[in-house]
Image (cartoon, rainbow, N blue to C red; front, side, top):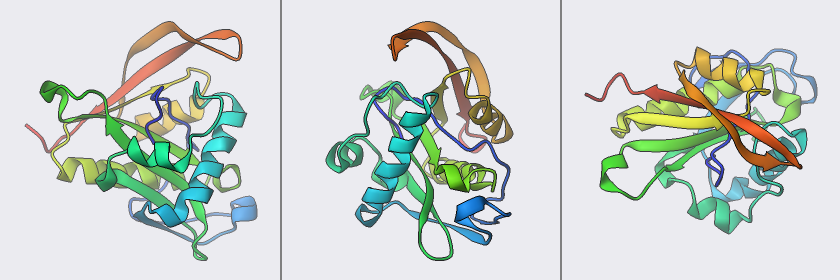
Length: 194
């Protein structure tokens, strides 16, 4: 998901692209994880996962999840995914949005990936992120970027495993819950776009 602040929450776990096998992931249970397009039918669960990420304190500057209409309008329709368990429950989601409407940035997007707390440690985040990158690569998008709070070490590790590099740290970028927060800018250049 690309929120207005471009922050990323994640589970920091390993996994496989497309369909992964879960471990003993707590309440989410064991089993296959299926990646599917994020649809309006997933709205309630997606926004709940976003709310849980906000509550954790290290995923985003946002104080509240958006309405479905705001969420839907800010994300590219062709690059929105959910991870589903065997029963169709949403375990996590990933999406991108443009960084600018200027034509020079047409192939640059900002992304977010969020995983519900009881599904973390099962590879859901990496499976989502790899699937999202396959989607953006196929569309000719040359840069996928995000901002991550430095305290969100799981997300930084996840992005490193997915081939992202740290561009730098934007110090004291914004206030969050009354405290100045730094943001680590990460990006991944597509290997398939010249």
